[in-house]
Image 1 (tube, rainbow, N blue to C red):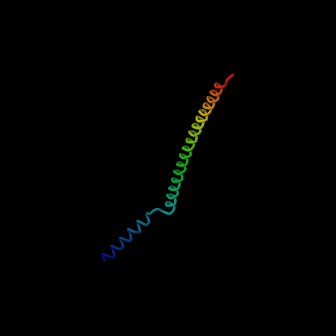
Image 2 (spheres, rainbow, N blue to C red):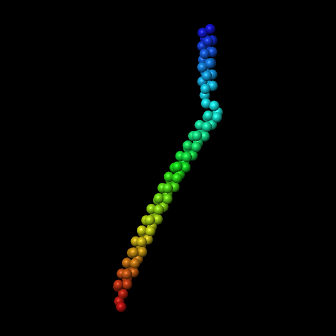
Image 3 (cartoon, rainbow, N blue to C red):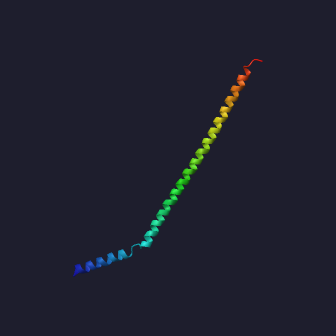
Length: 88
């Protein structure tokens, strides 16, 4: 008799745990929340990468402009030096 009562008690406790678990709607809501969090994290990472690329492009542009100025100055100096060497 004790075994039968123990089995009934175990079945009742098991049924209580199953009945108190999350419903399908709650599971779907949790899954959607996780997917939304992942999507937000991805878009944040993409925005950060885009900002870094824009910053690098700006730095490259500045470096190229500085190089062009140096080349222009070198050419102007070369032309001026060649002009001084001419006899009149």
